Image (cartoon, rainbow, N blue to C red; front, side, top):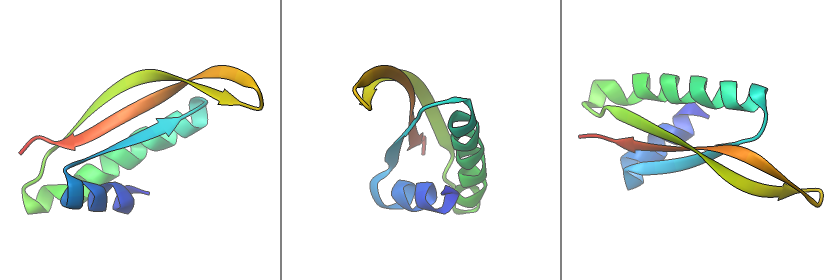
Length: 73
């Protein structure tokens, strides 16, 4: 997953990720941290803006955490 974030940053300059639940949110944060290690040698620093989004799963509306990751260079 961190490699996918890195490629999205190289190609588009940003990406969005959505996670529902404590475990997936934890994994998303780790992936962003690892991706910043991949992009740093190319002189690209990453920033992340977290937010909330309502999503419907199995007919139930729940809150998801959305991460917008972008390059600051």
